[in-house]
Image (tube, rainbow, N blue to C red; front, side, top):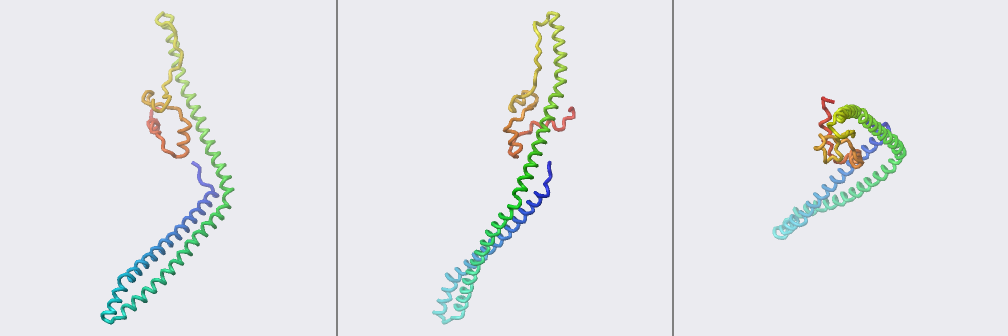
Length: 222
């Protein structure tokens, strides 16, 4: 497996810093919004419950201090709410501006990323093709033994033919390879093909059943 280059490390550092800053700003926005909502709830409680009760008390008992105190508190809350609204506008504007600046800053890495990605991609596929070449060479090498057995089988058939025990010779190498994955059980679990659809799934890290290969992973007989 290839390791990240210095260039990709720089890009990842840029992305990490970007995500960290965006998270910080989003947290500030969320906290400020919560504070403003709490203030609005408190102001509503004062406006709809406490202040009317204080007004009634003023009329009935002549008590004015509590009503004045609540009115002053409500006035301050409303001013604080306006300040929080302004703060939210500034924070959201700062967040959007930071995103735009980051997108501009990211442009410095585009060509470098494209160039390095092509190099890495070509190398990765070259390794895959080399592995495929080794896979084919393994099939060719291992099948030699099968041909040796087939040659002996033919010679045995020839003796039987000469003795009049058989009418002809069967000289086609028998294969025990499943044509499709669904026929694994008929061929001792051997399925050598790798369709293009499966190749794409493997490279794209999509779900694919390769469990049939596990029985051969630590086979001591190999």
